[in-house]
Every structure is written in structure tokens, then in C-alpha cells.
Image (spheres, one colour):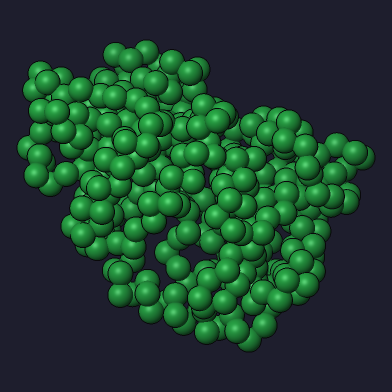
Length: 341
């Protein structure tokens, strides 16, 4: 096996999309998005007899607390790969360690798209990785909804309250608009900042979200779903469509109209749009479980009402490369405690 950089978009996308477990965080466009925001990236392919066995998108993140290499929801490994997974991963780890030393970063961070089990965790531990102090950079527990079924079957499997609220929003005259026009992004961001104040979390910047929209819209992989009531946008959701999955990536709702159940109708339209595209999985992109005091508890309850099943992947893993890592470790640990994660 050998590692080579991949520069062909079709080759990359064809491999990543063929793996049902992959997420948009390993798409070609996620790499482009990170380049557009000023980060350095590598698209690595692990080849076995000239055939791709795995790929890894690597991002150099320049943070105030120090720079590091980050692999988001990766590596993506072929289901047909017939060699020991540990052998492939250790080849990748060696390669990342070399890049990290050349780039003078303090650690390598990987959010694996691997099932949460002792076998997978042991592979990382045996190489010197440790559990990252942060709760997550991207989801580690999510809700997966099978939308290959008929619409009436999906509705029937929802919580009864959710079905009723979807119908009520329709009767109340809520209109759903699907678009990528900037006026709807601005409306989303206004409500998003209101949501930030309400739930006390760190927001993405407007330019960050605009860059995400601009990067993915060229391949028709993203939409803003806006719920309009009395000529005003009162809730909004940004959904990505990639491979066999749709991802509920950002959401926001106005507290002024909290008695109008627009968010329920909005997501139902997003689910129907995903079905219309031939997509079979709606990924709610992160929930918390059995943590009633967690800042995301209410949002998780909202998501769970749509049905589906919980999926856990391995916790984010860090490989320290020098002593600077431990300063990052304690800073992130303190932040985690303060935010109630």
C-alpha cells in the first residue's frame, strides 16, 4: 500500500460517494470550502495495487491555541478492503505524523467515521492517540431516519405531536421556501444570532456560512429552507445533500413566533426534498442522549420526534506531537466544563 495525493475531483467523489457511511465532511466541496476560508488541505488516497482503498481529507487548522491537522469524519475506507484495518490506519497515521512535523503543528486530530467499539478504539490507543478533551468538533452521536419508505409510513413513525404540529403549521398558513439566494441566508443568520443569544453557544460567522452555501450550491448540494409566516421568515434550516444522505446542518427559529410550529413543517419539507432526490437517509447531524441539562437537550428532543435510530461513532482522537498540545488539552477541557458539555 502507498499514499498519494488525489487531484482529480471525479476520482475522489466517485470513491467517497460509493461508501454509504461517508458524510459531506469528506466531500470534494468540503475541501474547497476549507481552502476558501484560508486553510491548507491535503486529499490523501491510500492505494493498494493502484486501486483506492481509503481516502483522508486533511485540514491544517490555525487556531489561537495552536495549529493542528484535522481529519473530519474520516478516513473513508472501502467496504471491499480486505487487509487488516489496523495496518491501513497505521500507514495513514505515520504519514500524518510526518506532515504534522513538517507543518510544525502540535497535534493530529481525527474524528473517525468508525463504529464506537473497543476494537476500533484499541487501534488508535496502540498508536498513541488519546480521547480529545472536547465534546465534539462534529457529531459523534446522531439520529438516522430511513426515508426510503413512503411518506405516510414516515409520518406514522413520528411522534404523534410532531405529526399534529406539521399539520397545524400548514393550517396556520406557514409557507416553505427552498432557495440559496442571499436574502434567505441573511434571514437565516438574523434568526441564527437570536438563537445564539437564547442558547448561549459560539456562532459561525456570516462569511463562514455564506462560503459554505456558495461552495456547495454549484453542485446543487445545499438548500436553505425558510418558513414564512405573515410575510416574515420565522424559522430556517440549511440542509446538505451528499451521496445517499441529507444532513440537517444548521437550524434557527424565532422566539417571537414560538407558538407557530414552523420548524416542524420546515424539516418535513427538507425530508420530502431529499426523498425527491432519491436519497434514502436523513441525518439529523448530532443529538445528545440522556443529558437533560445539556445545552442541546431541547434541540435533540425536537429531532428525535421525527423518528429514526441513534448511531454512535468513535470519539474524536488526538495524537500529541509536542508539549504544546497539553496547553490545548487543558484550555479545551475548561471550555467543555464551562459550556456544560
